[in-house]
Image 1 (cartoon, rainbow, N blue to C red):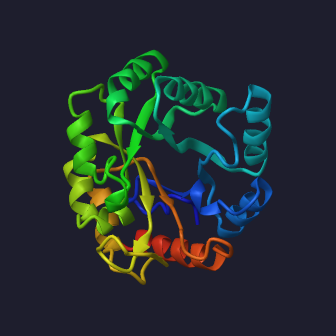
Image 2: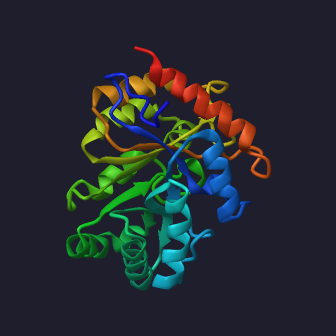
Image 3: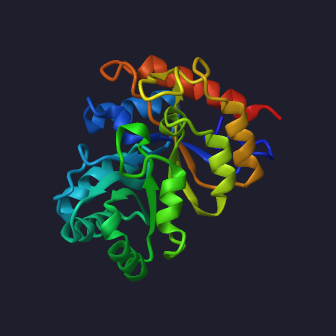
Length: 251
């Protein structure tokens, strides 16, 4: 079954958020992705350090490409200074991607906008829920970017959204023109102490999220970020991807 689970309804693809593989090498990450049949990856910097040169980046990207895995974006990249913004854009350029999933400090957004215009990239700003005052939810992101270049958009993490007391389906619909990436997961509580669980076992209405993505004709990736059992995540990843594919296959 292809990542998009094509049945005439789904315009988006399934991916993996690189943070899921924090405890594993590039080679083990590739092995697990091949076992679950997912070929799109948002690559984190512990697999490809931010200070990598072109040769080092080519070697890492080449390993994924040779395994049939598409590195479609990098991030989440945190940006605290103009120099870190410069580094992030050069890093993405060397990696051959056209989008950064990022979290630049609020005061850097006008500088990010200048870089967006120079590089013609997209920046998908990631919400981090009640744990972090920087971009806790999609509304906060929207309020800071709505008057900026339209290539600056949102990466909605539906788990953090739910933990922040928001409905991810409502936010997806409300901010649909600027939704450029999705981190998907399920959580056990709609509170700050909510934890990741296998998709379908938690409180998020995943079928409603899929229905909303179909409604807005979302064409990006829905990348699973599985933060439970991070030293042995494969069973939970497989269950979550299987559940999501099942939901996507339903008409």
